[in-house]
Length: 268
Image (cartoon, helix red, strand yellow):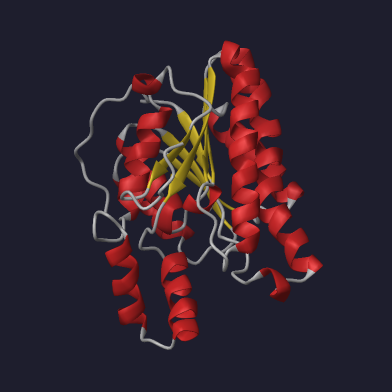
C-alpha cells in the first residue's frame, strides 16, 4: 500500500518509465516515484500483478499507464515507449529492471541460455536508453537508473550469467553517463544486496537444496552474513532510486551505488 507521506524531491509531474513493475523492486520503485508526484508508465511481461500495481499508483493520486511488455523483445520495448509518449508526451525518467537470468554454474549453462541472458539483462537496457535519450538530451533533463545486483561487484558462482552481465552494466552506466552529462542527463546504477523478493526466495530454495538444509536454515545463514543482520525490503531500494532521480541528486552521475546492508566487501 502506498503511504500518503512524501518528501518533496522536485519530481512532481515528471514522467517515469519503470520496467518489470508488477512486483518486487520494480513495483516498490514505481510506488516511491508515485509518492513524489511522478506520472508512471509501468510494464511487465505478465499481466497477473500489473493492474494491482497500477491501481496502487492511481490510489496515491498519480496517473499510471500499464503495458504488457517482454523486455527481451525489441519491438515490445519500442511499443511501450511509443505508448508512454502518446499518453504523457515525453519520458523524463527511465528505470531499467528485469528478472535475473538462470542461476547455475558455468558448466551447466548452454549457449542459448547465455544469449537469452544477454538479450534480457543487457540488450534491454541498451535498447531502452537509445529510445529515450534523444528526448532527454533535447530537453536538457533526464534520469536513468539501472537496477542491477550486488554481483556486479561481488560475483557469486551460482549466478554466472548475472555476475558477468551486471558488471557489464556498470561499465555501460559509467561510459554512458560521461557522454550525456553535459545535457543534464544523469545515469546511475543501483546494486541491491539480498532483498526479500521472489527472486531471493527462489535463490534461497536452490541453495538450501545444494547445501542439504531447509530454506529457513539457509535464509538464516544469509542473514547472518549481512552486517545489518537482515534481508533488505523492496521499499528501501525504491526510496533510494527516487532520490537518485530527484533534483537533490543533481550532481550524482556514473555511480554504481550499492544498497546492500553492508554485505559487499569491496571498498571501491
